Image (cartoon, rainbow, N blue to C red; front, side, top):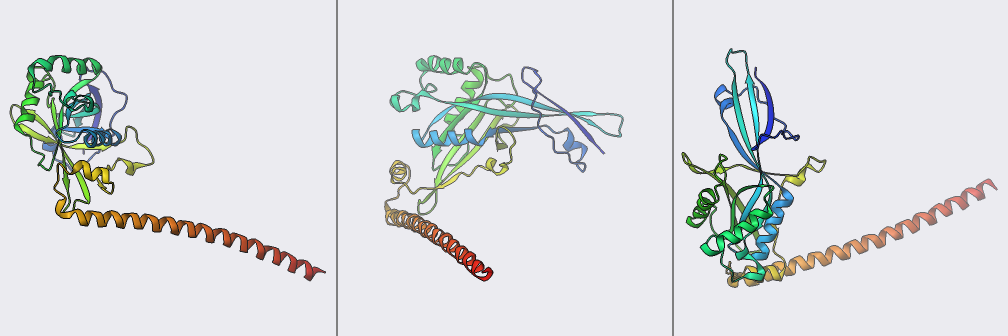
Length: 301
């Protein structure tokens, strides 16, 4: 039987007063107990904010991720004489910064990673603004592609690691890749995402990401973030025309929109009819009540 004792601290060795509740499995092997894990945590609200920015700024949106790096230290005690320690790394994403090259007001501005002259000023401003947080890594959004690192993304990660000297913490910097795909008739769009870490030994490896609330609440299902949504607005269709060819399916999309509109109108009229019938029912109940009262009084007389 194994007993797990844990303590969590951040990269600067400060004690964190919000320990993560451990999941204890008494049937695991000693080898698995000694293995180290690393996970990324992000709130559902922050993930939704990222997707909103991707919709606003469009394809090839990229930026920097900020937050903190925490550790769970597990002291494994057993009936054996020797004991062991297991460390779980917890990467918490608290905020992000869109790079200036994707600003709506500066659409012609060159990405700081692509222009040596703009690199220092742009990145210095972002780092100064977020100096109270740890620079965790880089993210990029691209449409209709896979979620594997490209040469450009790998180059940016190595720039952050070597030039910005973000290499003192294991698995940092991380790389986040977001992708947008459409179904056959382009009536629904889906966001895919994946996070990677890089080590000299293993290269780029995927890191598990956990989307959760900032605090536990009764609304536990809120943390199950849904990445699909119906594209029923014309503005959304027009914006994505440059990414997806919907010319061959325009009639189908129009039919879907008309169907959605008809269903909405039908639901509205049905609710109005239900409300009308409810009021009639209440009025009839009152009249019956009055008649019952009059009948009872006549019987007594």
